[in-house]
Every structure is written in structure tokens, then in C-alpha cells.
Image 1: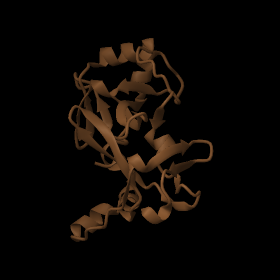
Image 2 (image 1 turned 90 degrees about the vertical axis):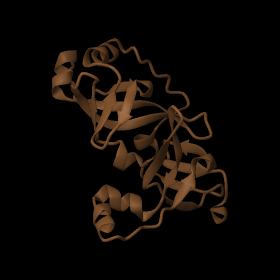
Image 3 (image 1 turned 180 degrees about the vertical axis):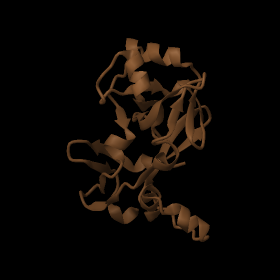
Image 4 (image 1 turned 60 degrees about the vertical axis):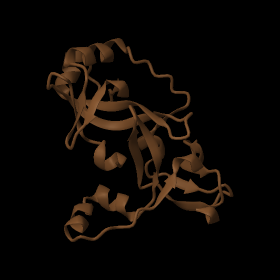
Length: 194
């Protein structure tokens, strides 16, 4: 499953069928070999913002991934009703310690990848995530053309034509560090090994 195709911009829906907003990002705990998804960042609908009494369009709601029941084709369905989401958002009950946390879109997507020697390798086109048991994990960085075409909306054309594009991925365990200020991802190995 890819972050852009399968998660971003999907409508987040409460258990009672109310639309909360659109998924904007996934937050992962980077202390694991394959980081575990811990929350989804949601850009709330105007109606939801009014219910909260918030006027800022830059307001986001962090919903713990443990409250996600299912990732469907068009929606992300929650285990909790709208009232509970309102309480979480207004009371800030999901307090996020940002140490060791990575926002996949903000910190990883479209970033340059450099090898252990500091040489440019490629750019992150998408992030591959998979469900492993009860948790969702980051598997690797998609550097193939498929991720770019998908984001531009051309992948469906290739699928209809029966053309299979090669997948190129760098496993997450090769990531040494995310350099946020430099907007780069540093690998543990030289580029020749890839």
C-alpha cells in the first residue's frame, strides 16, 4: 500500500457516519526498524471546526491510529463517534510527544535521498506502508516512476493499457537519519550497494 494513493486525502469518517475531514499526513514512531504508524493528521471540515469553536484554517486534529477501524477505498473509518473525536480534539487528549516522531508527508515525501557518502541517490516519490498484525508499518521509500505517475493521476491509464511499471524501493531499515532542516534523508550505506 502506498501513502499517497491509499491514505492521503481520504475522508475520515466517525463510527456514526459523520465526515470529520481529510487525511493529511501519517505520524510514525521512528524508533522501530519498520516505524509504526501512531496517528493520522486530519484537516477538519468547516462544520467540524465550527463545532469546536475554532476559526483557524491551519487547525489539525491528530487521531490515534488505534482509533482507526478500517482503511477503505474512499474513506478511513474510525472506531469512535463524532462526539468522542470532538472531545479528543478540544481537550487535546491525544498529546503527542514529537521526539522520535516522523510526519511522513512533511518530513519524507519528495525529499532527496543521500547515501552514506553524502551523494545524491534519488528522490522519495511515495512511502510504502503495510499492515503487520494489528499495526501499520513503514516498509520503505518508493523511488520508482510509479509513485510519481500515481500522484499525477496517470497510473490508471497504464493499468488500463496493461502496462506494469517496475517498482523501485529502498527498505526503511537502510534509513539512518531524516535531516529535516536540509530536507534530506540520509542512508546508512553507499549508493553502490543499492
